[in-house]
Structure formats: C-alpha cells, structure tokens
Length: 53
Image 1 (cartoon, rainbow, N blue to C red):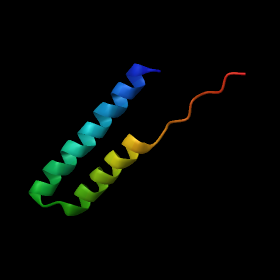
Image 2 (tube, rainbow, N blue to C red):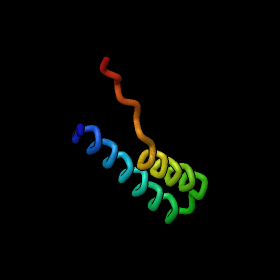
Image 3 (cartoon, one colour):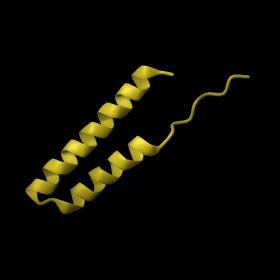
C-alpha cells in the first residue's frame, strides 16, 4: 500500500470539505455543491494502478 498517495488523497479530501463548509457559511451555495461533490468523489474513487506483467 502506498501511504503517500493515500495521504495526499486524504489531504485533498479534507481541503475540499473544509473549503465547502467555509463557502457554505459565506453564502456561495454553487461553490459549496462543487466542493462537497469533489470531496465525495476524491474519497470514493479508486485510482488506476499500473499493471505488472
């Protein structure tokens, strides 16, 4: 398991979620939807791994 790749994905998800909360509090509801959607996708998608033959 590549921990640095998981760490970067966790940091990216946390940033999207935090920015989504901040934009919700400031009233930018379209941006909130985009950031929460990005956080959801980045936490649930599995990235392609190279195949070794």
